[in-house]
Image (cartoon, rainbow, N blue to C red):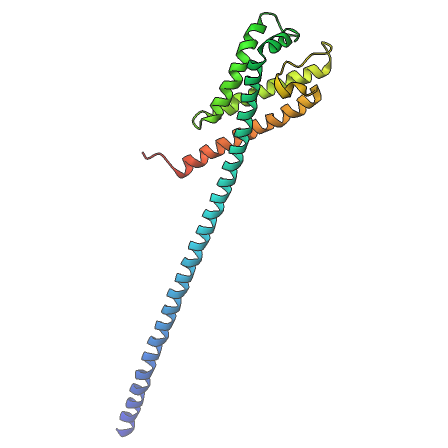
Length: 207
């Protein structure tokens, strides 16, 4: 009986020490798990914050580039329109020397400066900028093809009907100039559309 009691007492003593040890190990493992979860959350928050800053920087650069392109196009169309109006007599005489139908001369004489000035105004205002960029692209494309037509020499030597400093360029210079600003207009459309899509994506309309 004594041995059994001692053995029982020994067994009891062994288990009484083992149970708190297991409980202590479980507490440590749980604490490590909580700490690892906290570290994971911190890393996730930092990653989201970095991606947000990167996206904001990219949008800022795109908006800055769009503003520069729009400023250049506004300056171009404003100068083209005002120089034609300032040298209206010379502009009208040069139009008569172009291989154009006679009935179209009065329309182009007044319509072209108005269209150019209207394009500049459309690009200037944020709500109408996309339409202004489309019109700018159409005008620059038409002018570029007209320059290519003049370079073919099909109608001999055609004088430039532009006014101001632009009229000092030869036809090849006009072609390079027009191609550059046509690319500006096309890329402006892309940036403006991307800006509108990005705004709708991050500012959805509530239903």
